[in-house]
Amino acid sequence: MKHFILMADVISSGKKNQNQLMVDFKDLVHEINQSYKKEILSPMTITLGDEFQGVVKDLGTSVNIILSLEENIIHKKLNFQLRYILYQGQIETPINADMAYEMLGSGLTNARLELNNLKDEKSRFKVLIENKLQNNVLNNIFIIFENINQKWNLESDYELVSNFFKFEDYKIIAKKLYKTRSQIWKRKKTLNIESYNATKNIIRLITEK
Image 1: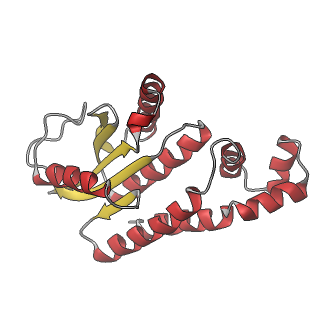
Image 2: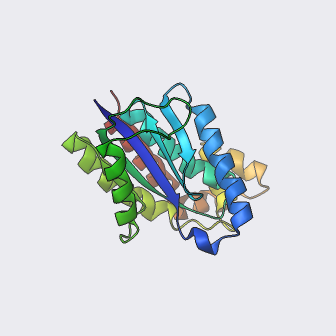
């Protein structure tokens, strides 16, 4: 049986404050494991300090975990980005339900290789699954997804973007942040929030059962 293997690493981790990075990274991973514990077969486990791997029940949950990680980084105003591989492959040994260790299989080996290869590419996302339509759509839509959110700045944009994730109505955000409705409406346009939400909807639609 082939499983959905999710791996990710911190981009340019060596340039970060190591102590703070580890605290933030562990907290981020722990929160995901708690939120998705019913859908995770083997929890996201930090393996090399700045990387994690896990095994997820299905494709829909796998992409939702990626989206949640991306949005939680913004909610928490974390000063790093992740690079992801979602790989569907074989795990020959029993699935370890406690942590993603002591498992062997070509899927894990290939996922690790693909994550290393991705470091030489421009994209932060790569999907390698059996369904060709889903595979092609996801890889293309993640390019658009990344083109939108890579332009958001931690200091000047994350707080506002976080509020757009929480509240659909820009008028509520304007009141909350003591800004005019016009200011927030214009920022919604320049931050491409509607395009971001559209890409997220496509990602979820293409992975529905």
